[in-house]
Length: 538
Ligand code: TNX
Image (cartoon, rainbow, N blue to C red; front, side):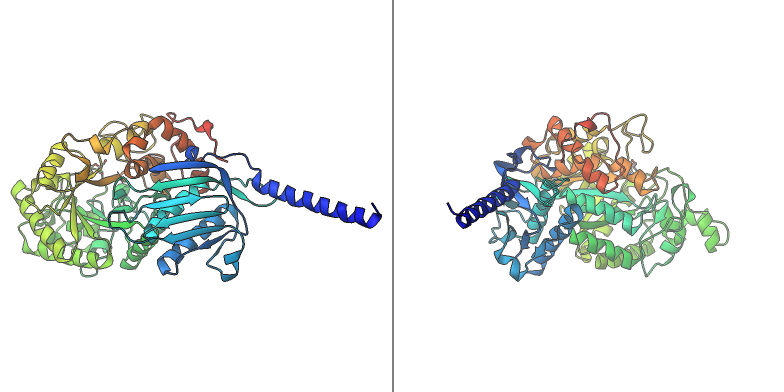
């Protein structure tokens, strides 16, 4: 062999070795198992094919040429950047022929298939989302986000291995919600947005805002300005309170919509209305009499309520002005709310006569319908004579739930015993209410909405919602302490079918949420019922 041939041979050999070692870096990753990933909520079905899709700087995202799909692609690209620092292009012409692809593929509409369902096929060279809607793509994107490890599989090459296989997924219930009580203590737009981010990550799709109560009125109503000027000026404990301007409320609605979450506003009536009646004494003649002789602003403010009792206030349901008021409020709120539901409360109206209560709700239901919306009320509304379209939110009295179902009304399940996020975990809980006992993390997860109330079958249940009443929490970190990790379990109760839910398996997946919870700076409660050291997440 002469020298040139030898040199050429060595060059080719070394080049080969170099290419092989690069490939090695790329392809010799340990086998994976998609079925064992820490996904929450658990998908309907998973089939693992045991190798890896490598996410790196050459990966790109391709979407259908429709604004909603492009936004979904941009959302994924942004979240990948936040987690890995990789800049992944969306629909860039030059990238079409190079690198691996994440493809959102719109399939033909089949009415038998849910809008939120998706099929995710991850192979070595591509990730394909098959879905009918951008909403389905958005849910699939949360699955992809959860599959990207927290640490790069090769920091040198900045690449991230995603396990291969196929996931077929759809929600167990169409309604998967949470509620924030911004009335007892006010939480600002940024706090609500953070809550929305986390809900979306776990595929929840409804955020109910409890906007009014005895202690505060939190939404600007232009035709009744004193509601926020007076009624929004304090909160439990006498803090400064606050309210959303209509612009701010719209900002929340729009942010939620980008995350495929519907906002449901609640105006609680005819009880829980002390703040409204203090702002406009006409709404309740009796309470007006208890005001100081003049009704100046400072006197009214002094008459606001900053305690934690319930059940002492009511509108005067026999006054025509009250219905004019309700009409104005529902009209303004409906115009700001694209979702189909308006919640009218209806709970704990202990000082409203039963006949007056029923008559009031019948009229309110018509007003809600007049503005094209469907009414939701807490379980007591089942006692009034309402239409079958009205939705009943079960929270306490199973008899009310049964009554509603006998009237063919649909139900949202929010059993206080299981998924009231404001209930203390145990006797050591720093915050929270305890009127119904304690709710540790396991008992919050370990129940079946499908079987919770005798005689109520799954088809009568719209879904589940976890309310968080805020009497005892005034800071977002305190609110988070109560909500997390319980809310994550509720997300699984809503999305995953009963056969796929299991506490032992769930708690392993839950501990592996800590990198996400830490990254989001969420002040979760480190319940001893879960072994937080068992973390495997890379
Ligand atoms: C009951 S739930 C209430 C709220 C309280 C909550 C405290 C419901 C419809 N009414 O007014 O804040 O308990 O857990």
